Image 1 (cartoon, rainbow, N blue to C red):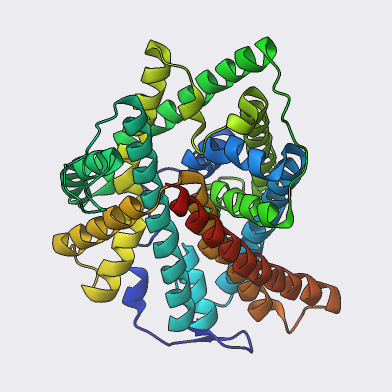
Image 2: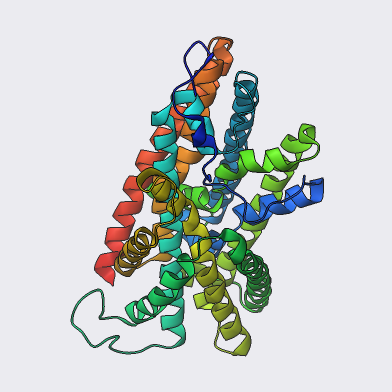
Length: 430
C-alpha cells in the first residue's frame, strides 16, 4: 500500500509486507506503557556508547560550542521524531482495513512506496552497522590499553599486526555464535545487563572527573573551536542522539498517547543535560590530554579496570542486539524473511574488517552521525511529513520542512567531509 501525492491509499504490494518482522520489533512483547516506563524506554533507546566520546569531542570543539551543538541536535531530533508521529497519525486515517504503521520502514513504504522503504532500510543498515563497528573499535582500543601485546599475531599484515586486532579477532567467533541466535527474546537479559553497566560506568567516570579537576584545574580549556571542529562535533552529537527509529513503536505502546510529546521533550532535555554534564566534566578533568575514549584517561587501579572491562562486556553483548535490525533488512530482502545464518556471518565479518581499519573511536562516531544519522533524524522525517501534508500546508509549514531537509543535507555532506579528513589525518599519525 502506498500513498500518492493526493494522499489517498492505493494497493502497491501484497499485505504480507506487514506480517514480516520489522526493524523496530521489540525484544519482548510489552503491554501498554505507563509514563515512567515510556520515559525509561526513551532513555534506553538513545543513551549508548557515544557518550564516552563526548569529552574528546568537547576538547575538539570547545566546551561552549559542544554544549550548544548538543542541545541544538536534541531539539532538532525531537522535532524530527514528532514529524514522524504526526505523519503516521494522518496516514493511519487513510489506510484500508486493519493495517497500521508500526515502524519507520512502514511509514517510508506507505508514503513513497518501495523506494521509501528502501531508503529507510539502507540508512538503518548503515547506522546499525556503524554502531557495531564503533563497539569493536572501543573494545579493541580499551583492552589494548589495559593489556598491551607487543606484536599482535606476529604477522606483518595490517589486519593482524596490532594488539587491537588481536582483541577484535578474539571477539569474532563469539559474535558469530551470538548473532546466530534467531530470537531477540533470548537476548533480552543481555540488553538489561548492558544498560545497567553503561549507567554504572558513567557514574564512576563522572566521580573520577570531579576528583581530578578539583585537585588540579587544567589551564588549556577552550570554549570555542573552528568551523571544521564544529562539524566534527555535530556528527558525534547526531550519533549520540540516534533513536529516531523508535519514535513510532514507543508511541504505539503508550497508554496515554496525548502525553507522548511532553514525555519525549522531557526525555531529550534530560539526556542532553546528562550528555553535556558528562562531556564538560570529562574535558575539564583532562584538558588537552583528553583521549577519544574518556575511560582511557582513568588511572590504573582495580576500579578503573573494572569500569573498562565492564564497558567492554556491555558493548560485546549489545553487538548482536544492534545488528539485528540489519539482519532483518537483509533477510527480508534476500531470503523472503527467513532466518539465514550465513548471511549474518558475512555481515559480522564485514563489520569486523572495517573495525580493524579505523583507528579512532570518536572520529568514526562523527562519520556515522554525519553520514547516516543526519538522514534518519532530519531529512527523511521532514521529507515524509512534507509529502503527506503539502496539500494542506501553509508557506510557514513548507518552509520548516524544506528548511530541515536542506539543513540535513548541508550538515550531512559537510560533517561527512570533515569527519573523513579527520580520520585520514589521525590514520597518518598512527
